[in-house]
Image (cartoon, rainbow, N blue to C red):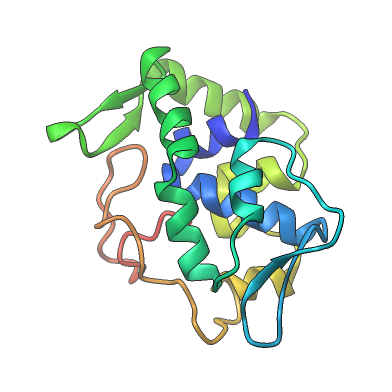
Length: 172
């Protein structure tokens, strides 16, 4: 399984966007301007279609996360996982969760040695090892413009409701 598939199984489309954008920032292929806008470093390229979409973003992180998460390339990852029986459609087709086979793949990936992109895919914000980049996404140290509380309506990829942790269902 690749990073995008694991991110989708673990946290849905927004986790796919987070993993791609955080990886690009950590690897120095994208940067944030002093005005808080993303830009691609000259000569940098994406390693997959999701990264290519992410590299085209010239907005703030919250705007880029939303745009990438809603893009057709991310929906294609999600639909492929549904087709393969690793992700199910929930009530009215809106909420999706990993099937037992999908959860087994998440657990298997969690025990393997993994790079930063896979840590972020599986663990969300907690998987970002660089504190500065984590703060940019609203992780520890809560940066201005933090993304905390801008979740998916209180549901995670496993279908569990979150309400007591104050995250507002944040899938990061």
